[in-house]
Length: 239
Image 1 (cartoon, rainbow, N blue to C red):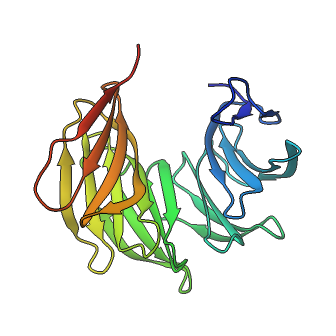
Image 2: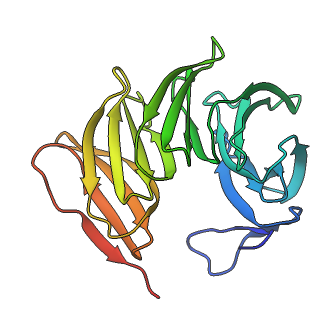
């Protein structure tokens, strides 16, 4: 990992642009909903907003006291949420660049966060084995879900209606939750190492919901999570 961000086109063998400015390793990159900007977090304790077309830095924001890790953008594009390895989450007004909502409660590093597609909830996942669900209107934690028995590497809402939420963990599992009762509806077991990340695949066929996951066992797995139990499809990584 280094401090640069490469912008790629899937049909080209060379990057279209390089974003330079961070002073330490880059942890996460997230596209703004409008598709013209990019948000990045880094071990240099900052997050930055970039213009994709010009590869220029539009905003450098410092405010975390530890390495900045997770990032998410509100569906309407007005807010950015970031997390750090000290367990602090901050919500920022993207127009002013100011922190408007510090969220504390996790005891350890917060690795991932995501806004619900309708914007009313923010989910945060941490090394304290929990996912917290925050009400953005009431500015408080609604639920503290003790989700796994090791670090949670990813939390992500289903795109569209947001009726499902997934979590992945270093305990080797992926869990699928409903967002009405905040209960686990399915546990996906198949990886032989810690799961580093997972996300919903935006397709639905015959009532099946699909998920992709990647793990320390050097495999990429695709899961069908409804109907008859099916083994995942494995794609090994090259060493």
